[in-house]
Image 1: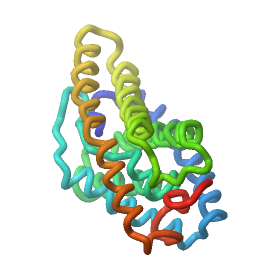
Image 2: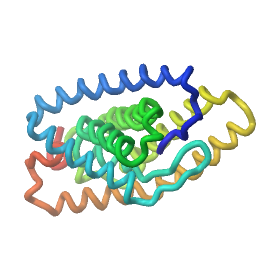
Image 3: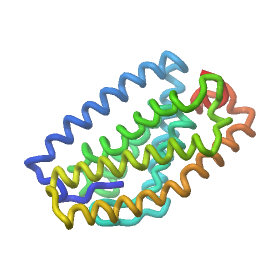
Image 4: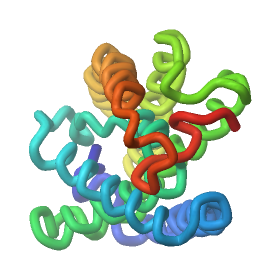
Length: 225
């Protein structure tokens, strides 16, 4: 997911600085919470693994331009379930930054928009997970319906933010709505794959006994809240 250059011009792009700052501030707050729960060392390790995963998702997995943006297999719910919200947020931010600095410098002006578009839906599914997953249920015991709800919500959030940036930058028109619809239809195809990826990763984690209590994954992966 990358907003195409020129969709929002320089005079309007300042809004993205504010939204990105808000998302970064919330990420900082939950990072402090993660440190209290599992320690700073665990946060650094999980954030490093999440960053490597995000970079892999962006650069190695299939991705293709569709209208106003690109379709990527970001697997945001997978990152949340495996590493926790704070490391997932840090991983998304750093993975996006590394890609922009070294592989796609033309995306750097859109960094604030892209960061907001990735992080706010992540925070949304963090809240959703607290509502639909019982406190006594470790993530490795998730059902398909729960994984689907998390994935659908994340992808819908990404599409909604892309639509917002396009309408904010280009205004309301038939062509704009058509391009948003094309992007949204293509992007929601990710929903077919992501819940299966979530369950496959969770099944693997459940079978690897050495991960129980490990600093490499979120405690909630194997334990009740």
